[in-house]
Image: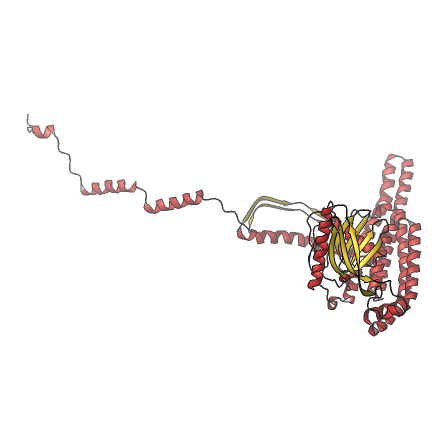
Length: 512
């Protein structure tokens, strides 16, 4: 009853309270804070565009910054290193052809090579007989065992140069620590690493076999003692013969280099390779040694006359004096080399008689190297061509570089080197049916679909007598006449390829 009367108008429609100014500011700021910022929107849009873009893979190793491997495991390696250096062919002055690289083995193609570039001529000033001889004597390594441990890296994260450097240091450190094995496998020292290993095997068997037999019974002890003693004696003789063979072989090379006759050195090298594969037992070793001693004695005596004649053919009067000097030196050196070779073959035959498993049989023909000495993919046809060229006419063309090879009907082969073209009957001992210098070929034509004809300058019979001393090319005498040499195939496609290849070679010679 004491309350004031209420206003009916106010009670019906109450008036909302007027908000305070500070309260309005807070509410307004809360509502604006819920809106996304413009900078955040642009950043999110950029991230989405980057994620939706295709992944950019580095094109080269240098483009990538870091490499990560959860586990990088490189397995251990065992290397058996053998290195044999041969005499450089300083007189190989090519006439301008070189086989192109051919992929694959080329075993099914009758065409053995593709001619595409010129042969770089070798500069006589680049040939140093002293360095070449020292390399042949000192740089021969036989079966040097090198063992490299594995490398295990876990959670490695590094740049490419850092990773390669870490791997390189791992293998370099181990290789340096085993360099004594490489030096100890030198033929000049008789391969002491092999000597110790072979003797060690015999000594181990001498104690191991009797100990094993003693565990079983007294009878087995006697058998073990016999086996151990036999193994020790066999290993001792084998080690000594192997060391003697290597030392005498190196001394033979050193003494042969004193002759300063590159043709003799090259010929002796080829004969040595044949003898190494032929001395299967002591009998064959003595026979080959006697043959090499006889050849050394014969060449030493005949060289007094033959070397001056060769010198006159090549260099005239100056070559005459050089030939006289070579002949006199050869008369003293070559018989001594033959005597050392006799000792080498004898010890080699004894070694192979004791342990026939030491003989190494070639599994494929030697790889063909062009005049630029590039290492290309192995080609069976190129290897055949080079091997056949080196076998022709008692290896007289071994200093030439193989350029082209093609099989023909009737077991014939057409072969081109950097100096000559050969038509060969290919059998156990290849026979040259005809041979023409490349510079004597005037043109190449196709008589029909399966015959290619070479038009060459006419060559008379070989000169004889005093005429050979003053002719620049004593094996032939050219006239103004021409003659034809036909090369017949049984396939027109082969004839087309043959014509194109010979034509390429002739065009290269004309460009020179």
